[in-house]
Amino acid sequence: MQGLLLYCLLTAPLASIEVLAQDLNQTIDVNKLAKIVQRPGFQTRVVGGDVTTNAQLGGYLIALRYEMNFVCGGTLLHDLIVLTAAHCFLGRVKISDWLAVGGASKLNDRGIQRQVKEVIKSAEFREDDMNMDVAILRLKKPMKGKSLGQLILCKKQLMPGTELRVSGWGLTENSEFGPQKLLRTVTVPVVDKKKCRASYLPTDWESHKHFDLFLKVHLTDSMFCAGVLGKKDACTFDSGGPLVYKNQVCGIVSFGIGCASKRYYGVYTDIMYVKPFIEQSIKVLLAKR
Image (cartoon, rainbow, N blue to C red):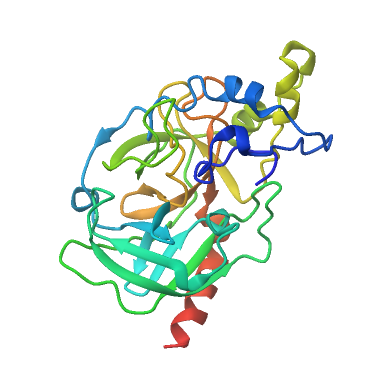
């Protein structure tokens, strides 16, 4: 998107990406912006986490590839249905070039591969502020196997402080621009929405460096935050993956400014808010069998 640094869309060097000021409609010098958000923004992926395997997680994590390149994570909800983030499809519109890989722990694992038949994104998804960042994929053939598992949708709104698990193949070092081969996982607490909004929308703009003025983010009702500032967070290429609570997917990795930033929390799509859209989309897609 323009105006935010997405966790998964940095598939080209940052210097080649045009980042626009959402309110002022001015282009930012991305080299200067990189100095702000990349330290410690891209130091580690699933920041503060540990190496794991898909089987240890429960076998629900899906690797989504476009033109054979890893792009985003996803969640297996049904043997024909994968949940992910809508922003993963920006600029990637050819459905036949998408591939879902299940049961993989290393990105070079062959896993169980299925082509994508159809994608439904919310009509309310907005690239400028990431509202309703959710998409449902219908696979051409069932995703089945001994190493696979499925998650159910979140049952209730989670209170601040509740610990959830986020996993993925994101960045590990400042100089890297591609995903990591090893799967990692970390637990992060839910952050109060008012506290998160305050971190993204400080009131005293004069006290911050001038580039921070362009980093204002509008957090909508379809979002919530999680993480420990400077310590635990999702990162680039973790996008679309699930935030999990007791075998329930309660969030989708959406966006953030840097990774494990000392100032900005990670932002996730709120499953409880988008649940009606997910359930209706699944019903429509499965009816086409």
